Amino acid sequence: MKIVNARLRKKSRLHTLEITDGVFSQISAQDGPVVCPQGAIDANSQLLSPPFVEPHIHLDAALTAGEPSWNQSGTLFEGIERWSERKPMLNETDIRQRVLRTIELLVQNGVQHIRSHADTSDPSLVGLKTLCALRDELKDKIDLQIVAFPQEGLLSYPNGLALMEEALTFGADVVGGIPHFEYTRELGEASMKKVIELAQKYDRLVDVHCDEIDDPNSRFLEVLACEALFNGLGSRVTASHTTAMHSYDNAYCSKLFRLLKRADINFVSCPTESIHLQGRFDSYPKRRGLTRVKELNEAGINVCFAEDSIFDPWYSLGNGKLLRSLDFGLHICQMMGYQDFESALDFITDNGARTLNIQHRYGIETGKPGNFILLDGADDYSVLRRQGEVLLSVRHGEIIMQRTPARITTPAWIQA
Image (cartoon, rainbow, N blue to C red):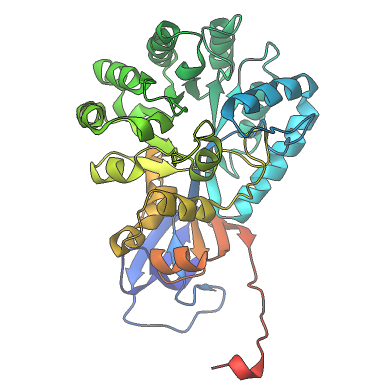
């Protein structure tokens, strides 16, 4: 496969790229636009980017909003209650159908790498086992990591620890946790130590739903980061949500950031979900309820954006468009300076790849897998501002999605 007249992120010149045997074999700058050779792809000066990365989603719960009832309060905790009502209805066929429809949405919008949490607070583990099976079936089509996630508590849910070990033995890629949902602070702290212990025992990554609450006294992040630091796991550990950080006082955050930088852990923020779920117990002023994305980023700590949910008990919208999540995130976090726009796509590309620990095989470089997307725009700023469509998605040199832009007819009186 050969692509000409492509713009690359943070590069001024057009480029020609060649993919041989599924990997980038040549990338060269052009002096200007060239005539597209027969059989090649003309990028038409559009932006060629690494594929989008969805680092945090719940595929087992996708497309279940309102089944059997809706989350009327809009709180995280009612969402968990509604999901517990839906779980008895789960079966392999149900899960497969919904997951494949959701993955189709993500692929249509440029995603090729996904990390999905699967609930282990279910004695049958049907969700996790079905997702692991789909991961293996689709491995040549899409990258899928499965997190063993104890939605109702690792230590508070009956046999939660045994179910976690069963999930890891079965083949889950990542150890999850939810310390703020454990019954007590002591159980929450103990769960973080146990998560790290399990990650070492089974040689797995870690991704914890950490401090997803407005409570400024929810401080399990420091426990997770400290355990990651002391056990040398660093970048293999991810803290998702950490919305309580929005409510921490600045003096505590100053101390906390010192630990976070040394620990070298990753962060995932889910802007649309968090702005919807958090602040529900406030009157006015209402908290935004997102972690300190801007401050983390400026401190050199890896942070990325995710969608989290698509039409499930926690969030009844969602469409697979990470550009929408990026747009919301930059607005909510007040990252609206031109310097923020210049590298905006980092939050849904490179940073997500670091979180998934796949950076060694990700990116537009010779020798790396020939995976890319073509975006309607010239650079990060124009793609973000216009919410540019994903025009093409290529994996290992094979087209997996192609979109023809809509044709728009405007009245003669406004035509330039």
